[in-house]
Image 1 (cartoon, helix red, strand yellow):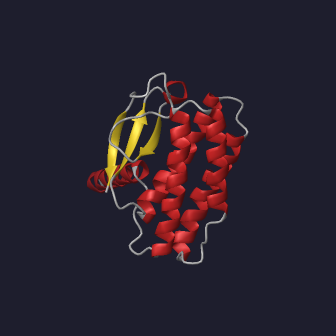
Image 2: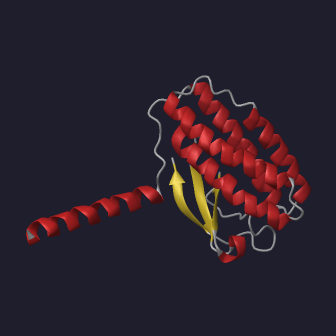
Length: 181
């Protein structure tokens, strides 16, 4: 009986460990993605980088303009070539993306805009990992001081850290956590 209980506990702990690993990186790439879908995700990524650049430059007006363009690109995303699984995945992450872009557009100051960037960045990270639109490496970077020291991530096209959360105050604060090939 003790042996059965011990085996049960070991199996339970092993299951928890694998769930913890999955929770840290729950996104896996889809095996087959239509080229037009990849192209559309790349378009979202370009808009994302424009938004990041505005925040790096401490430009609230630029960030709002970029968010507006980004929202339009997301709104016009054609989902016809997505498989049912891809569609479910896209709808979840695009919903977060659209909500945070709308909130960013209502921001009264640059710090409010940067709070929304954290959600936008996580949505874009998930889509990049799943749909793999990039032909060149992307870098998933982290700033421990963002969001009042809660930390936040962002995507970058370069390994050099140029932090959209700290802008011109501390542009090199942060580190690369993952290279996405």
